[in-house]
Image (cartoon, rainbow, N blue to C red; front, side, top):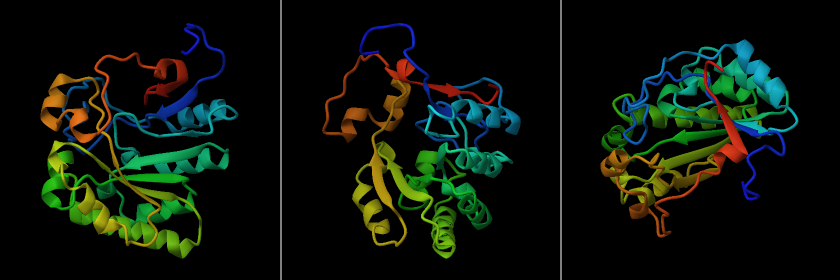
Length: 239
């Protein structure tokens, strides 16, 4: 990219593997949740996932098993995670804790998952569901997070790194400090942050969620060239 070349100088980072594009959530800031993505839905086969991991070894140290979908709804997600971790490809799992019951937490810890990012975009039922829809049950999310923390503590494993995240948009504006206060004293959480809002270059999403520059002190460039095609690839569920 920086050399303005159109051919690759090496192997790309496989940044995302979309194990499924099924999702129970209707996130207001996501094209999938808004019904704007209409391609067929499905599940990646375990065979294809393992093939990708085997090809990635040696040049992709980590990957995220998601693109436009909730990875924990894939029936074989734990097998996939365990396979990748055993072969030296660290998994960063982004998920909503509403769909992570205690039994799933136990299996994720046993699979030696490297990192889990828990999307909790509110401080109560109202704000959580305003952002991610009715499937994002705040009380259940809180219970599931504590179950994950307890499971990791009992296992005495160092992993997964547990990251609690809020995306800063209009629907939870002014709640970032309250969010942090609610969780900063909870033992076992490794990181708490409020992530900047990605508009997906959509004027309608900007309007519904609040423009990116309203939630940051940094200037936002209105027109930029995306560097990702030169740096990384994403593989959809169908390959």
